[in-house]
Image (cartoon, rainbow, N blue to C red):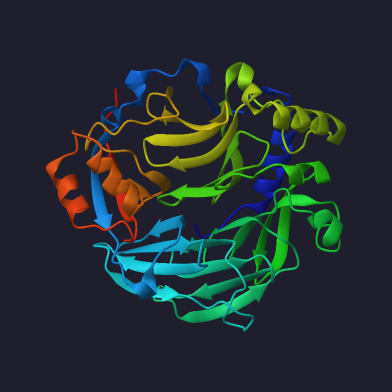
Length: 397
């Protein structure tokens, strides 16, 4: 992505904001509706073999100095994995075979350090690793080997970010009170901004901020990408936006029938308070998108329903939805499905299984394949997680 039409961004986002009302979404030209029916999940749609061709299991090298606490994010480029460990605030770098290369472990208050990692992103143009430290409102850039490059500071709080290109960052403020704390930067309060060298260049999606929003847990990911396509999904909105060289525009509207959350971040405050209060008291009344992962042919959606994280798959070529429900059955290798975090450059999905869980899954099933059993026999419960690459079928019926 080299350039972006900021005028197009402004016009499209303002138009779309006017097209949402309560639980009804008016589709603009070029949009598709992803219709999920959470109370009609079918067991046959929960079988992984319907969608997946094969899985690759990659045990990550373990040693006392490189133990991973919890994988928050995984990125992959042509020959490496970059893993954000939210438990230790370290970024681990591994090769494609799971061999350790290096790590970024620079907690502190120096110019090349961070207090805590709120999020990370790998620049698709040059594989630079960019770390967001929300406590210092800073973005710290390292090269693909973990060597410090530079730091930029911004006078606002953001919960997520991504790179449009090597010079431009796009950041999402979400539920954070920028309108109150940083009124000079956000005089009217906005959710989405682009910035260059730490300075806001354009802002979009006017925020009707109120403290009531802080009582709600945000999404697992806001920005997600496959190939060179970058997308965004907001809090309190089931709209998926595309961020392209020609602008930012709504691409998909995710609906749940009678369980569709009847609000967006732009819903009037008093109405939003009532809806959120009801939602917190009875979360099974509505569904909310928690995470979206996409590749060439599939959009995988994790959503909350009846106090559980559930799953659905949208088949892009057929424009059809499969409602999986709370359990996605791995009938290929006879063990559980991994926690899926991202898509990869080769059109696969990437996830992980903790070593102790992997061992237990193999131990407690009689259907695990010989290769999975062999991997399990080489593990201990204290080992690092196993990365899983999921290669999807080219044609899905």
